[in-house]
Length: 132
Image 1: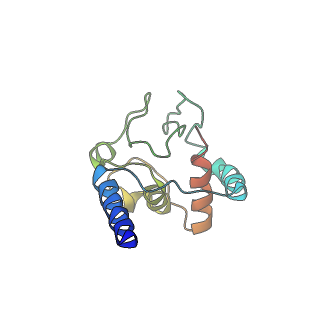
Image 2: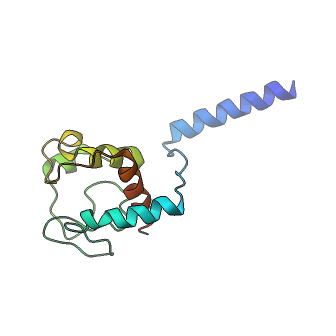
């Protein structure tokens, strides 16, 4: 009976967590991924700052972007498409967006063709997760 009870408690816990809106556990990235992401971020840095409260004419700061609701940074005017999308910049959303911004968010303002290499995208996302 205790084994069945433990299984029932586990199932109820999973159900309550799913219903509560809590996110999936955070992804852990290696230091190598973060380092490679910092190097690859040079491409992003042409249009995006990585410091708090900074911005460029081309894009908002990416400081604390990982896990944030899209369209919330100050000092930047977002597209209607992005504001209406109700996105959270988590790993899957960032991955899709970095692969092809125009497909992931039609009508967005980002003029970038995307990053086709899966590893490079993951590395950049790893780096973005450290900008806290």
